Length: 551
Image (cartoon, rainbow, N blue to C red; front, side):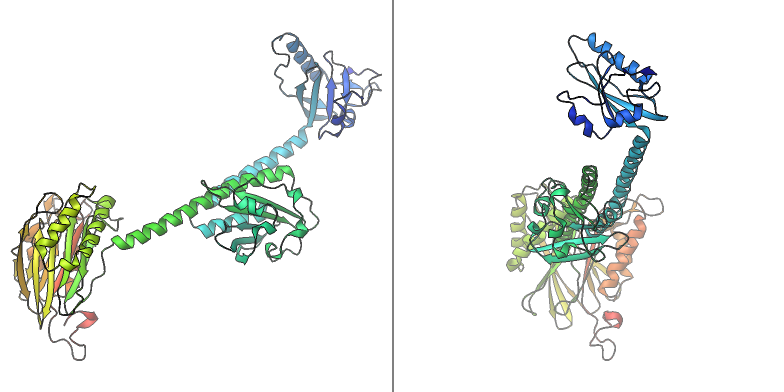
């Protein structure tokens, strides 16, 4: 130990150093030769007063470090302030970490940090980072907006304050929020209130930096901000929840009476907490909005649910090329006639390609066909106009389809068919005979002109007209895995479906085609059946059979 000079004063009046007496840590200011220029009261208590044989000393490890810094400074003409690193050693029986700050006049300010205090601070920081990791794990486990808000409020109340309120961005005059007290469960609420009633809340909801807690008077907080279980407030902190480009809300931390304002370090950690929470809430909001838009658009692209129209049974089924998809390039529609005695237009089509891009063109074709319904009685004219619409669009895909104009006449159903580049429909007679309709034509959306040859068939009670896409006949599978299902196999299947209800025919065809494919790859499959209901039926069922099927 190096003795301190006995005339070293405990404090000095040197300008620029008097503020060190209020420093949060013990401070020593040493001259270049190691003499003490200034020492805070806490520093003198740590190393001992200037008088006394044992107490008035500077530890050799501290003096050696100081002299090395001074020597390094003297050797740097271009840089009078050399880089200084902390050193550790023992003082007053405990470990101390000394942090140097070199001043322009050559003196060095040594900040003496107690090792125990440093350990406590390190433990607190580790706990905080562990909490942030835990929060991220909890929030990333769900993309549900309400659950993210509840988790944020519950975790903030458990670790940051006595209670927490998470306020969603305003959408109108009502403030939506989730509040939670420590140890309690989140509670959803809403109130007609002005965010400006809480200092800093209106700014936080717009994404501006938070107002320091000491600026907020807890007694001025409105009653709706006080959750059940907290009778009064001692401190309030308002922190924005930053989102992905737009604010995700605000986090309000509440402390009960007897507590002072939140410390600056606590406010900094609250901002880190809010950043994690805001990113998760924003992602959940974005996901929910996209899911809502997707669901709305999907409903317009999904095949419709078919049923009896004007005395004729209709049924349809669809399987996308990818099992997780709900839409694709195949489609079917039924457009009832305004007059019960008029013709109903049924359409089944196949757009080149698969997946979402094909589904988009499918939607366009379905909308165009709906607009052309006044011309549904003239198939060639309708296909010509549809062909022109597709040729003038930005799509480079083409489509095939079958138009079926259906009219019920007494117990029989007349079907006028026009195939545009599509497999001809198959007619299933009541006795199991299967016939192919004599219709053919050019595909739509590829050539300047379209040609089509129509055919008219008459269905007796119990007979059906089956429209299908080539995804059924071209499905590869079977025992060896590479054989096509084929039209002949489809004919044999339909031959077993004589007098079966329309729904049963659709289900059987799709079931056997799916079994044939197995787990292999396949194209979109679509089947639609137009059937003449069987006459008779069970007594009292109005001509309908068990489970709504024709008897």
